[in-house]
Length: 306
Ligand SMILES: NC(=O)c1ccc[n+]([C@@H]2O[C@H](COP(=O)([O-])OP(=O)(O)OC[C@H]3O[C@@H](n4cnc5c(N)ncnc54)[C@H](O)[C@@H]3O)[C@@H](O)[C@H]2O)c1
Image 1 (cartoon, rainbow, N blue to C red):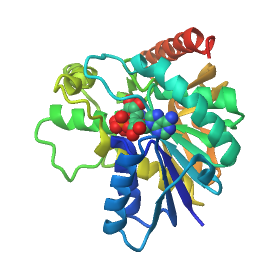
Image 2 (cartoon, protein in one colour):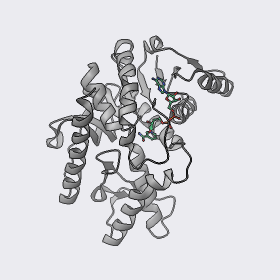
Image 3 (cartoon, rainbow, N blue to C red):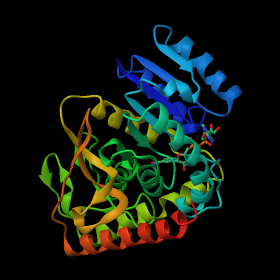
């Protein structure tokens, strides 16, 4: 019995995840939770018509019982004038106090996929405050790797759509993210970039968040995230091991402790089995260390008060 619950499911991300999951056979039961009852009922009336053979319903926190996977996309509304996801931290920490308590009491053994921002901090908060083990907690940051591929395709001349790219991004899900040019593969073969190409690709990545917000529409990236979270959900329901980048609480890997940050992880239905320790180029290593230092500073500033 594969029961998936989504907290924040009336929102852009949560409803997109409900849709992408419903399009597959990933869940036998989909429990949707949100404080915005009217909007959630609107989604449910729509989804149950689209998928009449599926068990999709509005739940309360008690209905988290029996969940194999809990996806958290709850958060305060997006604002267009922010340049950093950290701007939502204080408000979302308050929301996570309740969500963390409820998830820990009703679904203590579930795999928890957190998407709410800032994702590295909130994933670590769940670990530190509510007794989840680190293998249960995955912070969702795959959009960064998807965006790296998008930027590469934008910059490389006439790259056919049939080319298959592997484009991992580690570090913070934020301004200090680290695209791993040294690990990019095209059709399974390492790909080498010129310095100019790297600069152009970095520019696309580094200006993306501000450009997206400057459209002056408060909607976040529901489609990208719905696609990526489905991938993570399938991986954590499977006996087989899969690897991808996720934010994980570290315990000595990459010489880091007491933070959650984007790293390569191996997962299956038991959650995170292993953090893979890749050898990084020296510039990537120092960028990763800077990224970890930024997360640690934010944690020290905010967690002291929570
Ligand atoms: N990790 C990523 O890649 C990624 C990508 C996009 C957005 N995000 C983040 O995901 C979060 C959600 O984004 P969105 O666009 O779906 O926002 P949204 O405003 O559309 O939806 C958030 C939902 O959370 C609900 N909510 C608030 N407090 C709640 C609570 N205590 N319990 C249950 N539900 C609650 C709201 O009613 C709302 O429906 C934001 O923090 C956003 O920054 C992360």
